[in-house]
Image 1 (cartoon, helix red, strand yellow):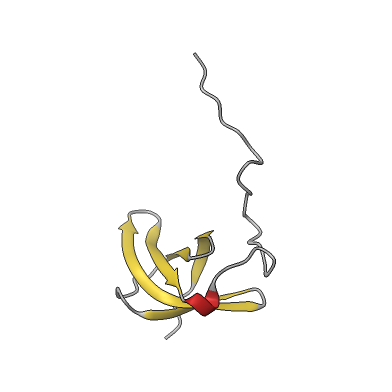
Image 2: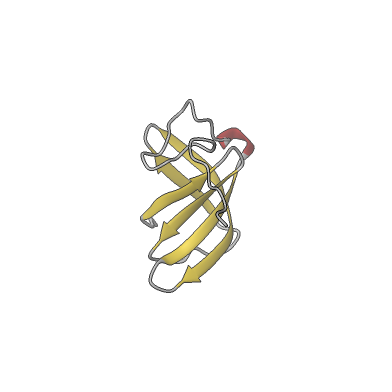
Length: 87
């Protein structure tokens, strides 16, 4: 069964997908991104009203993410912006 979603966060070991439908915990899942398919296991599925289900996926060792594979269009690299406190 395919569940559409939006890739919200990704790092070498995990990904977070926002979906309109829940995914059972400990489900084997795959995320089709650009030219790569990442495989893993769902670890959390949290419902946020007005947004949907945030599904955290622990990526399998053979599916570790690398920015050389692809970068999500909405990805903002850390260090590109800074936030300061004002008095």
